[in-house]
Length: 379
View 1 (cartoon, one colour):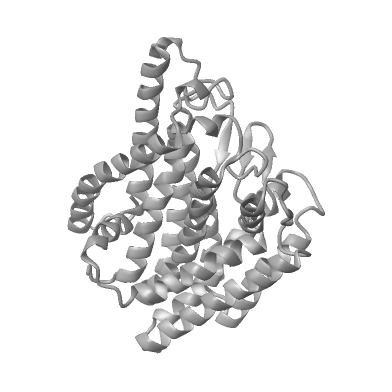
View 2 (cartoon, rainbow, N blue to C red; view 1 turned 90 degrees about the vertical axis):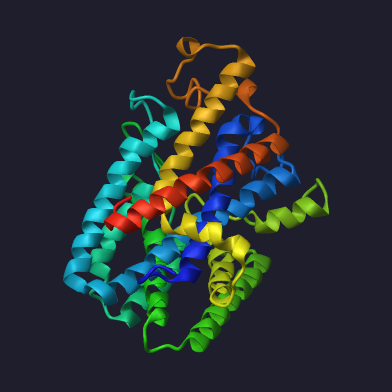
């Protein structure tokens, strides 16, 4: 294991990044992606729904693990150095989101539409964490739980661009779409920061694993109870589906990510905490590639977006017979040059995903060696 790193965190992050690649491969390759939402229970299939649902764990994992890592870094760097790191790292992520990642999405510089996506959210939250790290742990835990548990009650009480960015999701003039509401995700990062205290010298590994397991079970139980009661915690209550029992079950798990709801948080963070607990004692060789991915998350993230988009665009051009000069890259004329007729079915989407991950592995091994040799921290 690389000095100063926690293997279980890298392993979980790496596995999540492999799953994340499935979601983005589906975005660019799957023919139905351009026709309906994969969680639209009136149009989707169980296979399409579950392909999307499993990737719901990705963003919460990144945010939770970022919070844990900030605490670990606090003990290594001290507050003053960590504040500088959080501010510069956060600003770097925001710039990458609105410049590099935006181009990876659309393959244009028209700026007729820009998604404020996950790197934006992570960057803003990290900059805010530069202030949070000065709070007592109890205050941080209390505020995080208050926001996680209570923000659903006030999400719709106001409007405007600032409110949309902080508490909701949607269009922000003149040409932005805010998908990740800052405050609820900040609360998850703050909770992760408190959980990160378990990785200090005060807690032995057995106690840490037990506490992570208990927290995870608590979150899952709270999700199950609140979702069954069907009164609070998500703007989309579950219902008995006319399409049959399986769609009723899917309705139960069809919680809201944009903006992130209490039930979405409970449903995803609970299993993630349990996995963190279990991964401390796991020693499976075939999982070692995931650790490599987990050590170079930002490089992997940016590289996989460009690779998916280039591959999908080339396939679409081959399938439709269009040349590059014939494609309209304006939004929403196409999604980065891709139209519905250029997509493939779900089975071939999975094939594309597997090929992508296998191709990325040697590239990430190469970059991980460079990163460790030169001490790179920002990519």
